[in-house]
Length: 464
Figure 1 (tube, rainbow, N blue to C red):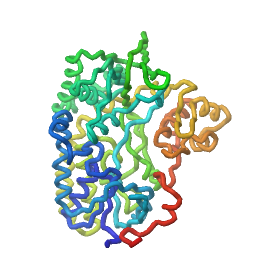
Figure 2: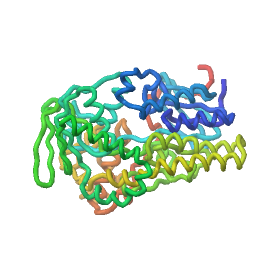
Figure 3: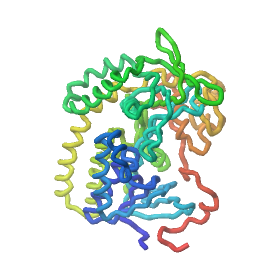
C-alpha cells in the first residue's frame, strides 16, 4: 500500500473536493482525509443520500454540491471518511485517527481545507438544554432530517440565521420571534459597498426573498437587539431580550443562535503559521499568498479556512490552490497555470463582489462580548467571566497567562469554544483591539486521543 502521496487534502467540503478532483485530473496522487462519513462538508453535508423532499427544502444552492461530489467520486483521488487529523508537520507529514487507530501519512504537499465554523459567543444561559447554533440545526436536518420542536426563537445576525428561519417555516416549525442583533449603523455603513454588490443582484434578491418569506409568515421580527439570554430551570423555557429602549421575552422550547462564521485555524495555529486580523468581521485568518501557500513550502490553506467567502468561492479557491501545487510538482506548465488562474480569478472576482457589502452589513455588534460576571466562558473547565476579570485585575495581560491561571482553554475542545471570547474580554479590559491580543497556543494532538493510541502510531499502509 502507498506510504507517500503527492497531495493530502484535509476536509471534503467545497474547497477540498474541488482541489482533490482538479489535482487528480493533473495526474497527481491524492488522498482526502475527512472527519465526516461522506464527502460534502458542512455546506453539502450528506448530499449523496439527500431525499428529493430534503433537497426541495434546502434549495438549489445545496443541490450544487451533488455535481461537485460526483466529479470527485469519478476522479482518482482516494477518500478516507471518519478520519480525524490531529497533527500536521511542516514538511507535509500528517497524523490521523480512524477506528481508534492512528496512522502517519506522508505527502509532498498538504491542503488544509477545514472550512469555517460558527463564531462561539457565550451568553447568559447558553449551556441550557434547548440552546443550539444555527449550524447544528442545519447539520442535523441534512444528516438525518431532524427538526427542532417549536416554539422556537432565533437570535443573532447574518444570512445563515435568516436561511435557518426560512427552512423552519417551510418545515412547519412555529417561530415565536427572530431577534436580529444587526446594528443599524452597520446597515448604513454598508451602503457604500452597494454599487459593487449590485453586480451580484441574484445574491441580493435571494436575501430579499428570505425576508419576504419571514414577513409573509407573520413571524415577529425585532431589530437592533443589544442582548439576549436563555432562561429556565433544567432546560430552556423562555428567551429574554433587550433593545436600546425596551425589553421583553418569548416562551421557547428551542433557542437557535448565530453570530457569523469564522475560519477554523486550529491546524495553522498548531503549525505556528503567522495570522492576520480581520477588523470588520473580527477574526484571525492565516497569512498566505494568493494561492493559499503559507510560509511552510508544503502547507497550503484553501477555502473558508483561509478567509470566509462562502461555498461557491471555496470551490474556486480549491481549484486555484491546486494550480500552484501542480506547477511546483511538475504536473503542469507555467503557461497552463497562468491560463487556469486567469479563468478562475475572473470567477472569483465576481463571487467576491458582494462580500464587502455583506461583511460590513453583518459585522459583529460592539456589545457582543460585553458579558456579565457570572456568564460561563469555558464550559470544559467551568471558567466564568469573573474569573478572567480577576486574573486581569491581578496583572495578567496575555491570554495564555490567563489560561494557565484559570484553565480557560485547557479542556477537551482545546479553546475552540472559548478562545475567541477570552481574547475579546481581555481586549475590552485593556481598551485595545482584539487583534492585538495573541490567541491561545494550540499544541498537538489537536483532537482528543488516548495515550494507548498515541503510543502505537504506525505508518499508513503498514500492517498492524
